[in-house]
Length: 294
Length: 190
Image (cartoon, rainbow over all chains, first blue to last red; front, side):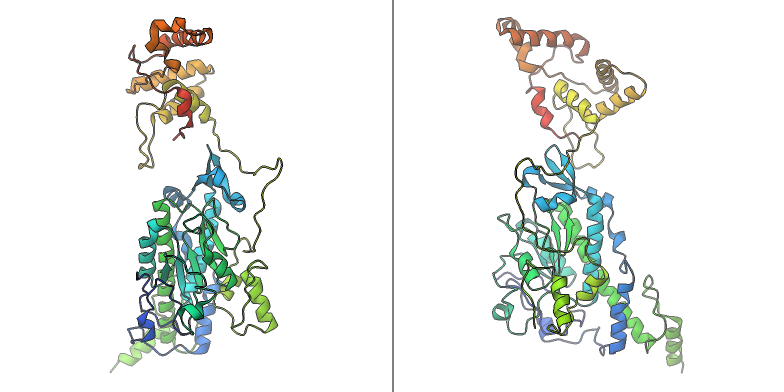
């Protein structure tokens, strides 16, 4: 059986039982028999964790995802190229800039705003320790997506999607299974150009979705659609890289904030500037100094 | 865990929010606060795709530029142009694009006559070393004397083509037959 999407067991942030591993995924052993890695530490106190969770929501772009891409970089990756006008889906018309000699061109200004929202949401979910599942049914990019998921410590499902995987998960995957908290679609359509079953199933199971929607896709049920080209390799590589960076950044920030709050002791002092999360506050340094002096 | 599987009713957010408010769903899902803080531009509500009937057309516009008219004339006269398109290079300028730029430069200088501009732009490109071969419609040159035996309309066309040729031809007499210029109009300009 083909394995895909093995997560990195770096964060102890999955407390609610083993996650749902899709049919082609190996059940991650690291989470089942957890061996205390370097991140092993007592869980943060409830008030501190509430503060950690609420702090990022107050900033409009806490993880600075805007700097990861620009309209020019989207253009160079050929994200604006859509399908022919005959393949156009009616609900994609608002996102289409125009039609150049029969080929639809996607409006990159809109794509940029949508992409920023999508990356921001992904980063926040990753920050809170959510499980992210990358789904795609394009065989050409199957390996790329699986390695992207592996490198950011999340999951991928790029094989045949068995019916009931999300809607009948306790039966197919085990009783105490945790479903993904976010599903990212690199391709919304399956190999027969119909909407992927997981789009409808995620809506059924109230799982938010982020999806790259091409001009022939239906963006209605996707929570954070990103209108863009899903057929050119440069475009898919760009999207994979963006999502990977967003998730990695978010997890890194989480580690830093937890370490920071632990050093600071009781919640009360003003939390550090999120732009410079690595530097501990002077109060913490003073405490360390006191500790080390003979 | 309680939940609502009605994907056609509202969005996941409205359903979850109402379940929490009713007290049915005890625990707030992980994404709820994030969605609250950063909602999407359009609420992900199900819509049934309906067909367009009668004369209703999609509002998507065609993209055309003023340079397209120049490009159309270029392709009609010279076919695809001497240089192949290098699509790997993002700053690639094809022969047609250079022609168009020359044409616009000359237009800015004050010229108004389209024929003259066309000729001048061609000459300017020739001065830079780009050789443009004219494409002949309906294989008039190859048949040569057989042209006169063809139908009157064809004869008239070939006459006008022959008349235009001497002042506009850059390559003397080395006419190689290509497919007529109309077919290459389908090429997307650079």
